[in-house]
Amino acid sequence: MRALVITGAGVSAESGIPTFRGKDGYWRNLDPAKLATPEAFANNPKLVWEWYRERRERIRSAQPNPAHQAIVKLAAHANEFLLVTQNVDDLHLRAESEGRRLSRNQIVQIHGDIFVTRCSHCERREELCDAETASSARTLPECPECGALMRPGVVWFGEQLDPGETSLVEDFLTSGDCNLVIVAGTTALFGYIIDWALRGRGQTGQLIEVNPEETSLSQFAAKSFREPAGIALPRLIDELLSKVSA
Ligand code: OAD
Image 1 (cartoon, rainbow, N blue to C red):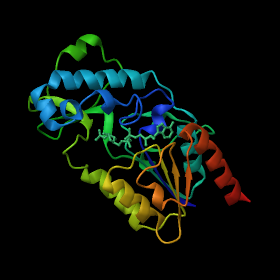
Image 2 (spheres, helix red, strand yellow):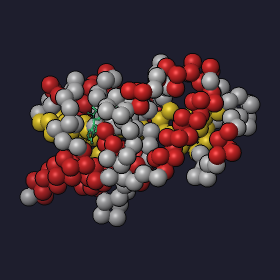
Image 3 (spheres, protein in one colour):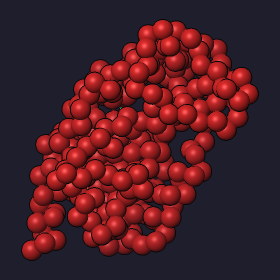
């Protein structure tokens, strides 16, 4: 089996991480233009850092849910597998199934990693350590190489995707069609998400959507499960794997 899984914020919702556009989602109460753009960072880096620090705190205390675990199970049983996630949290990487975790080369975090900080000017990147204290959060970190402000290692509105990450997706897509493409927990607003899902499926693969709500991808899906990912994905993946092994 060659499988591509694409996820969004809905997959982490059952771990207590807010989505962006859903009920209680970040963008229902907060203005993305003030928090998730290069201009917002230039205007008020302290506010942006504070918002990301709060999100990191929330993610650190969250646990992977059955949706994350089911995806690890699929990865463990597929011959070839890639997870493309728009999530900047680390819950996919922390999830376990049958004592296994995803390896780094099985996941592309296409919108970056909230636990990475990078320089707003040069190429310097650093992992944020676990021990982020309230006092360290009050000071704005500066690049040890060029002195410019460090910024969260995520993709903001108006920015290009990291070409290194997109090429990992392209390499996977060009090396063969997938029997199975699962798209879970995303409004699929970005053209590249729909493009990758459709190209991944190719002529003969099956495209399955898991989302309580209809999305712009639903019209292309062979099946849509209108349920929370933590319910639908474990059942769906067990069913698919039992067919493969039968
Ligand atoms: P959204 O908040 O746009 O969408 C979340 C989706 O998850 C919605 O379609 C919900 O119906 C669905 N959902 C909610 N609970 C669910 C559950 N328990 N199980 C399954 N699905 C559920 O989040 P994304 O599509 O991930 O980008 O948003 C994409 C990007 O827009 C984010 O990466 C972020 C955001 O602005 C940037 O910040 C660049």
